[in-house]
Length: 178
Image 1 (cartoon, helix red, strand yellow):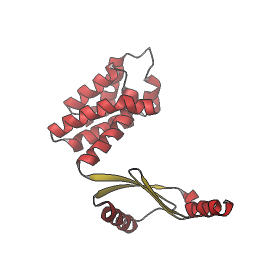
Image 2 (cartoon, one colour):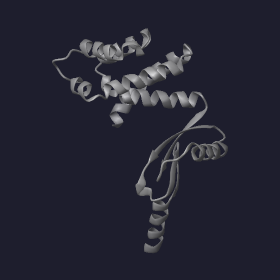
Image 3 (cartoon, one colour):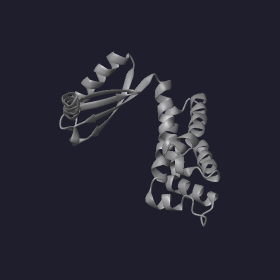
Image 4 (cartoon, helix red, strand yellow):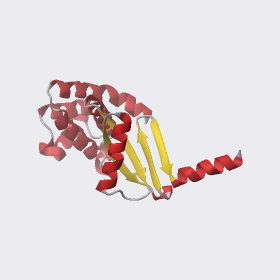
């Protein structure tokens, strides 16, 4: 996985610079997300690296599936990725691009893992609290993991806040063992 990120980084950075220069970050964000989604389809994954399918054919197939989702620059980018046998790293390119975009916009990404579904009010309150703490806008993505029993785990950058019942039980078990 680390190798895919290493391969994807220069592509993501180049696209990001192009998007900033042309002031179309949102458009590129959507195109990369769509391309990554297409590349993750089981039938497309089976064609990636298949010696029977040429790079040009694979690139054209992606463009045909995406039809009007890509502008001319996006189409050229996908064809170039296909020619360089890099279609398989589209999810990492998209992810890295989103990270660069968030940094550029002064926004931090947060991953919130909750034991239960969070309603809009709860997420808004948590996001507001995180924005005060970090003094930046927060883009929170929520995941549900019932194994937490209750509470949440919040990851912002390299900081992790564990306010889950599972985390408290593990800390208590550790304390009792020592």
